[in-house]
Amino acid sequence: MKTETNTQAPTRPALPVRLLGDNLAVSAMGYGAMGMSEFYGPSDDAASKALLQEVTDRGVTFIDTADIYGQGHNELLIGDLVRSRRAARMAGQLKIATKCGIERSAETPSLRRINNTPEYIRRCCEASLTRLGVDRIDLYYIHRVDPTVDIEDTMGCLAELVKEGKIEHVGLCEVSANTLERAHRVHPVAALQTEYSLWSRDVERDILPATKALGIGFVAYSPLGRGFLSGRLTDTASLAEGDFRRTNPRFQEENMAHNLGLLETVRAVAATHAATPGQVALAWLLAQGQHIVPIPGTRRSAYLQENLGALDLALTAADLKLLDQAMAPEQVRGARYAAEGMKGINA
Image (cartoon, rainbow, N blue to C red):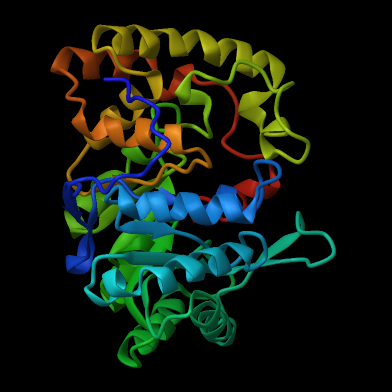
């Protein structure tokens, strides 16, 4: 099941397609571009652009970004891809998702506030359209919910942008089942994006069932547990300066040591399939529902190939049960984010 390293990027046969809500069809695995701009240490624009080309060459038709990733830098990278893949985009194959709703301080990017006012959403939408170089955004998310603004008002603004042809589909990120239901009554929500992986499973209680009941797609970010589930990260000492995992609670020494023990079951399942731990983690996620689309991110061609290999891995019922038990939510130590990052989660 392990994929061989290949320095070229041959066009792969079309990937399986999954249907999110509002009839939005995308490749069964998407690509999260955030790490090309910040959070995981230094990156190189030329290498990022080359990898984005490979992403589409290998059949991925769903790419995720946001206006705050690199303060607009990430959208500019995607815009370069869109221009180079104009024919594919015009044919309706490539779907770009971006987000708004978080304001970050230009001087101190770690400081932020959530803003869902209609005026701010409109301003952000226009800026994203310009950076991406498109006339319409395929999927536009509210990145975090502002508790001072009624979700009905936020969705009303998004509905107007749909009518104006500036966005095609509406999405929300990290909202509660109740907020999702309220929002969906105002305008169809095509997708809910929330962290979901073997070691982040809180959505299974209320949120995931709500998406199924309402016919809303579920886009899983950090499906590899910020690299932890790949099995390649055993401590934080090797992480680059500026890598936010250095301060993430789950990666702190005692929590990390405990969580590494849980990963042994993932390794064992991987060994029975000649697969990697990361492929097992992604295959487990894909098996949780046909409306679920993971968006792993990477800056390396070899890891991109490895991730896509998970689409060919069929776990048995026994495998799934073993993984469910070993990585049960109560077994994992450490919060998903530090306190600042938890603001607006499941709101």
